[in-house]
Amino acid sequence: MAVPMPHTAPDTPADILTKRRQRVQSAETGMTILKALARLGGAASLTAIAAESEESAAKVHRYLSSLTSEGLVAQHPATQHYHLGPEAVRIGLAALRQCDPVRMGEAALLRMRESLQVTCFIAVMGNMGPTVMRMEEPSLPVTVNIRPGSVLPLVWSASGQAFLAFSEDAELRAKAHAEFAAATAEQRSFIGGADPVGTLCRQVRAQGGAIVRDTLLAGISAIAAPIYDARGHVAAVLTALGASNGFDTRPEGKVCTMVIHEAQAISTAMGYADA
Image 1 (tube, rainbow, N blue to C red):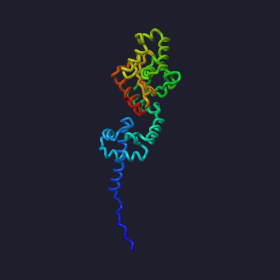
Image 2: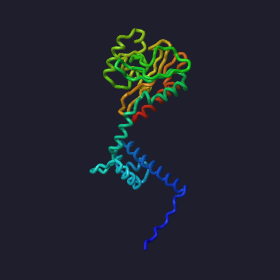
Image 3: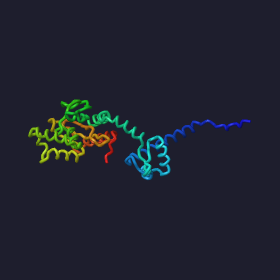
Image 4: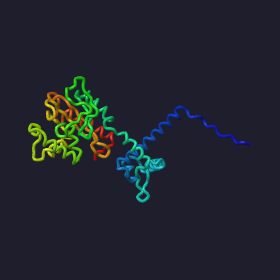
């Protein structure tokens, strides 16, 4: 005679909700451990990962086993340390391919335009020099001959100075020296010292960004800060520009603070981690 199977009551809505929450919590814990491993440089011991994620070693070990089975984590056979696995590498590479500083900086340009009421743009380094790629202007824009596609000088524009000071590029330095030598005496008077280009770069780095007042265009001031990619290279420069008589050029002022903050936020989104 067949033995009747025990009857299992269907899950109630409350049971379904509880299981769903457990799955979400499990996924969140797994991501917390994976991000902890990434913060530790991509390779670390179980003890270090547990400490970084603020979870018990036993719990972290269970999750690392699951992450290993999915290829997101791998374990070195000699050291027993865990490191990011091939699937994590594929995810990272896919994310890097989407890192376009111009596209990722669009929201920052809009915020700066609305908050500061100044012209804002992102420039990248082109074959001819710093080139404006995306630009946002306030309702009453300042009349300047700068548009998307415009190429800016290295020494006399805030954008160029930011590229020059933060790039550590010997070729850029050579171009800057040639540009300074070809400038008028009035322009050269803005930068003094036996090594004017080096002096300029040190000043810009100390400020965290480039600040110019009437050096490129009379009556126009600008502030620029670098946007870094995941490798720590300057991928683009974020710039705010306005009429000098109403433009705050103080390093601690609202404009400089916001430009640097927004550039840092874009850099973080690009995968840059400032050591």
